[in-house]
Image (cartoon, rainbow, N blue to C red):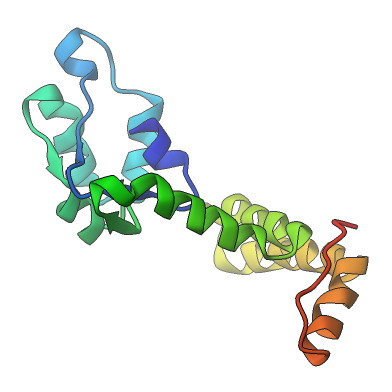
Length: 149
């Protein structure tokens, strides 16, 4: 579950199931469950934490709850992961980084404070060469040549 709760885009095989074995092996479900309780309804996170290895969440339930973003045929999982990574990597690297930071850093803030902080990430990226290259490439109907500067 650690990877699931820290991933930006999470896909899973149609054969996947999800559980947290901590309490079943005598350990406290700690960091992972704190993150899981932010991603899922509290009662669902508590159930997973307290049931341990004795109950597994289906991939469909994980998808329905928003824990994962896509269910993929088992034999196509790695291929699909590469497709997603390639798609993200076609975007401006500084804009991707700024967007990730804006989302992750503001999740627990009041809305107005989060918007102000997110705007600082936008302002930083707006002053880069890539911020000029993107619109120029769009107008010229060509693929952008990102420089990450």
